[in-house]
Image (cartoon, rainbow, N blue to C red; front, top):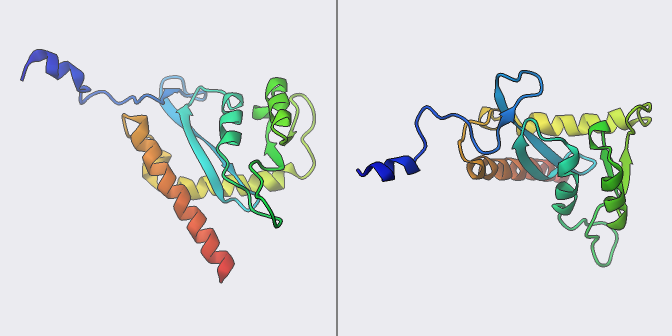
Length: 171
């Protein structure tokens, strides 16, 4: 094999993928983070994988744009949800303005202010969805070097959660 051809392939010792970065808790380790948008019942719509040191605010609009058609009242389905709930990590004035332009009402706790009443109950639904998503050890720990492979594993996991919730509602 030519020496130039060898350089194209990653070294077997190389463990960091494209979407890994220093962990906010332990800077010695690299990691990744999942950003997730779901409905009020915890059914996931879209998941994005980023490096561990990427702020939540940056992914707000990408997640809002990734929502599918929302069914509800008779007639043409809504393209966007009515409201977007988020914790203090998603608080940003430019993002709130962009969400209002898209006719999405942001319900986000402000930094330095007390939490919105009963937001913790709704956040519990989101945490349960993360637990279901990370039930697979392969998704909880980012082993793949390429981000496309990891994202390819996340989408069937979200589909499996949606299918189980649909099956549960029908019975």
